[in-house]
Image 1 (cartoon, rainbow, N blue to C red):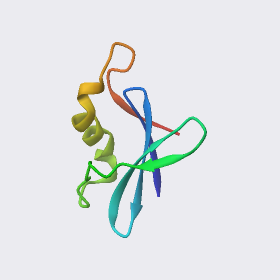
Image 2 (cartoon, rainbow, N blue to C red; image 1 turned 180 degrees about the vertical axis):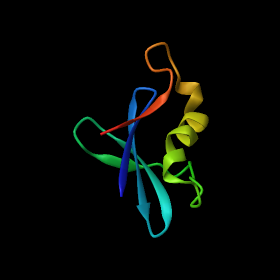
Image 3 (cartoon, one colour; image 1 turned 135 degrees about the vertical axis):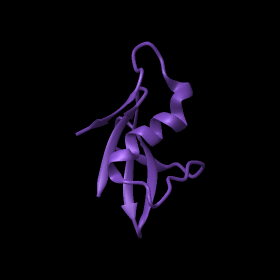
Image 4 (cartoon, one colour; image 1 turned 45 degrees about the horizontal axis):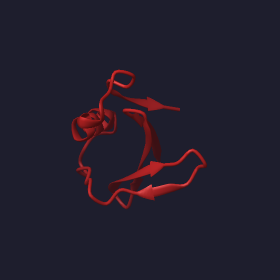
Length: 72
């Protein structure tokens, strides 16, 4: 299952693969690159993903994008 988020202006996606959450950055052209330096706890509930990403990437907050939110 894929979840897409706007992480302070950057589109990121989280996939559930082999009972683990895997994080990717997405480009405007649809390319994605895995983010290896962020490990999302496998037991984290799906509805807590946005808050987790907000906590991890809070230093990217800016006046235009003040929080993480789910996109389509």
